[in-house]
Length: 329
Image 1 (cartoon, rainbow, N blue to C red):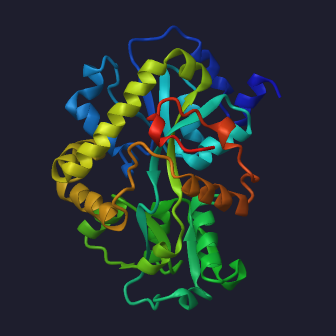
Image 2 (tube, helix red, strand yellow):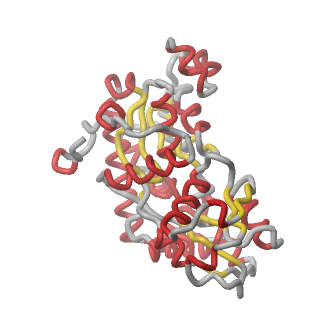
């Protein structure tokens, strides 16, 4: 498959004309679900503090996406130098031969909750049997998480009814309307709905049954790695600074991100506190957990998205990481 056909496999061939245009004065980033889910918080902090500008980077606002291959398509267009995308999207692109590499890690582990209706009997694995489990779409990460949960509980897919709900918000609506019995919800969606008076039962044990998964990773094209390595190093270092600031100054980080996410500051404070309460290291600063990477790969293999093993050495470029923290591949 030639380069054009490889790009077409992800629907990005149409962006080649844009990519060929003369560079503007803007350095663009793509961040999955920026302004909607919490992956983008470190970047919002960095922009508010002016750290990108002080480093000589013309980054004004990351390009958002709805996740999946859309994030990769956006990154391949225009003047985009870096993207934080879902690990499954990065692996799918690499599988198609798209010339990208994974260069740093974004988020790892549980960053949301399983919820059910208040009063629903959902205290341990046996309570899942016969229940309706919501997930977003076939072959999605949420489907793979549900299948992993069932496996960890010693149950089979046929022991439950899996219901596709379209997206996270659709799943919550389906739960409220008694169309499913348990779904996954992310922040700040959960905090916003609690603020609006909704009541749910957090199924804490279900999340704890899951192994740690790498959720998002930083990627760049091979060409940008070779030609714009200095800029990429600055982006990664500034993101790390944003992560460290956020953990040390959660209240201020909530006020900053409230503007970007168009949410009240108390909602963002609740959201950040919620994620930290279930996973105090969800935003990863500068280390790869290869077990978490492989856990996600295995989950994707279970639903037929990719085949194991993953050639991590060919998929990753670790030059931007501190030498002492580079994993053995």
